[in-house]
Image (cartoon, rainbow, N blue to C red; front, side, top):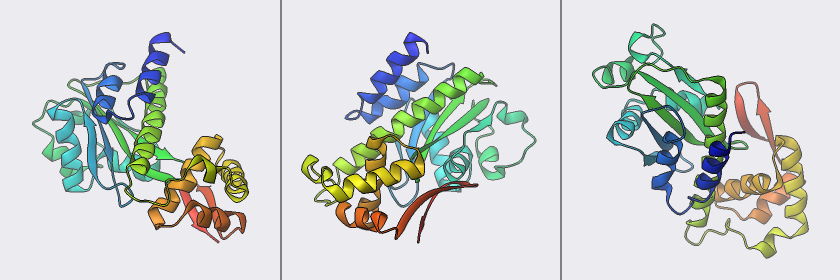
Length: 237
């Protein structure tokens, strides 16, 4: 892994209190003109968290307004979306968005999903003024950036939830049921322990419940997190 990439990853992880800097850090590490980071859906709401410039913000805004575009596809599928030559594309997958962006200086656009376990949070959008194909390495690096950003955004959202019982203390994390539930989620989703706890915490936040309640549902097998063929989902049993 290149030293410059490792340094960028470390800086991203340190930007939890300055989300406006996240997009610039990513754009500066890749051969793109700009980037935007957005949350979408009911869980964290739909908004642009960070954008490098007006064009990047406009790309997000158009997709929000029209309900279509690469960011929506990336979030729903939990897979990256690549459009290396937007103006000459014959795919026709985003007719309204493509028409709206036609006069803008956007030659290529890419979207990488933001998610932690089964929680679909939003998208990292990259754009280039000219047509551009990301290399395999650059695509992997973009996905890695999206992974770090996902954790930063989720932790920040949970820590800023006023009076939420889902934001637990270290003492509550140590309880046996939560430890057991964390181990089960870890096994179900193949996540490291800190992300497995984040999944439980975020699910509790979304439902207005405590982590203890969600942990009990997991341990008693009333709640199970799984991965489907269509992306990362969760199901109740």
